Amino acid sequence: MNESIVNRIADLPRPAPQYPRHFAPIDIDLGNWASLELLYHSLLDRQIKSVEELVQWLKDNSEMSAVVGEEASRRYITMTCATDNQAAESAYLFYIEEIMPKLKPLGFRLDKKFLECPYTADLDPDFYRVLLRSTRNAVELFREENVPLETELDKLSQQYQKIQGAMTVMFQGQERTMQQMGVFAQYKDRALRQEAWETVIKRRMQDTEKLEDLFDEMLKLRTQVAKNAGFANFRDYQFRRFNRFDYTPDDCFKFHTAVEQFVVPLTQKSLEERRQALKIDTIRPWDTQCDKYGRDPLYPFTTDYELAQGCLNIFYKVDKRLGEQFNIMLDLGLLDLGSRKGKAPGGYQSTLTEIRLPFIFMNAVGLNRDLTTLLHEGGHAFHSLAAADQPIIDYRHSPMEFAEVASMSMEHLGMPYLEEFYSPADAARARCNQMQGDISILPWIAAVDAFQHWIYTNPGHTRSERADYWLSLMDRFAKGIDWSGWEEVSRYGWHGQLHIFEYPFYYIEYGIALLGALQIWRNARQGSRQAIDAYLAALKLGGSKPLPTLFEVAGAKFDLSADTVRPLMDLVQAEMETQGALENRV
Image 1 (cartoon, helix red, strand yellow):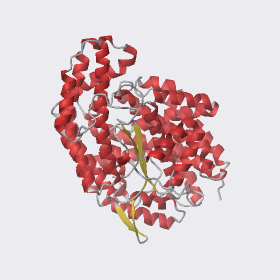
Image 2 (image 1 turned 60 degrees about the horizontal axis):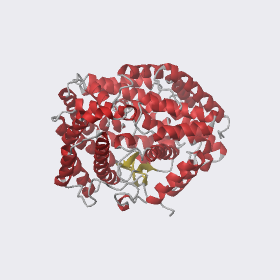
Image 3 (image 1 turned 45 degrees about the vertical axis):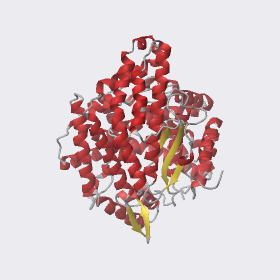
């Protein structure tokens, strides 16, 4: 492997030799609607005379979904890797404006054909139960009039990416991205931290009105989508759209309450310990990410290559199969790791659905959180690879609640091997950081989720009311930070959470998944091999089983209540004490 990480997605041929096309022509122009329409109509018009022919029809339909899905993914990846590339932006916008909207009505007709086929009743009820349930749901939700509204929402999401990707500041004589500025949040020089934080916040505030306008338009469109589908509000519509058959809004509220009761007190305790260790009167926004003992930040790597190589070694130690899979990703150039101007923020794993390979996107700047991000996205990648041989595309991905179990579990399963990057004392410090992150993220997840419940069940709210409700949630879940002089900034803290803009209601999944991941980590501490095998067995199921079954196969209980939250927080707190005794606090 070369000593640099190069994104070579454009060089990967389609189809892959191990997944040849049987239905779509090799030379089809995927940007030509007439060619695609012809193939979809041939599926609609096909006569199905046996259950075997129905199964083949499902496979051909899956192939088309995979071929088109990969085209959309490649264009999205190219656009996010260079949001300032006009050609990439135009290619992506063309697909979401001209191709995807036309596919939705055809997808609805194909779903109806499947459900109305007389041989559907003869399919294996155990294997096809989840597919039938989700297909019926999709048919019930589909409305022709929502197609242009969803296209507009996709375009608005792209605008959010563009706004965020364009944010840079001049700091210490150098133009830097928002992600690159994150390095300074960990510096021990408090004055420097404050200067960096204020520089970032002032830049973000320049786009406040622009983002408020953008979200208001999204809110209006989403409310109309729900109304068109016959729902009282977008929250209830989105729960159905996400196939949330196994939990309800009331379960989310139980999660919020459990976090408030058993996690927030831990965060309060942690903030007070931080205040005392830093010897300051109050915790300010620029005091939350630095080391409380005044140590320099952890810098586990300096180059993308070092990050990838160290994680490769960790994956091998967790399980040889995982190391081999990540090595293939490196060889094929299925990663874009570093932060740069014009690159969209955040990180994600996207599956190239036809060649059935994962791609990892992130914005690494040399910090410990980048290491955690690559472990996390690596978990998603392994999930994609584990389920690659599922015969129908719907089963090659799991419900989002379990997809995040795959990634969050990998963060924790990799913890015993952090010495790949650190000395033993610094590895213990990094493990403490991981546990602290678990405690810190749960209240934020609860706040973001509660915020969205309120937003979409009160769609007539004003901007001021929205900001006030956000502040009330911060008082409930994030007390202890002194915002004096920056009160206005705190009213818009949600603007940086891309899920609220682009993926509404996709955030509680991280909380549910963390509870599952902590259970898998607990199992691994007790008996490593059995726990890893159970984890990988669950990944292999993809989306072929209901959510509670996926958790059960992985060795975890699907539950959002205090019965699960409380003992896991006890475990996390105990581990923090253990690792804290091992780290060097000087």
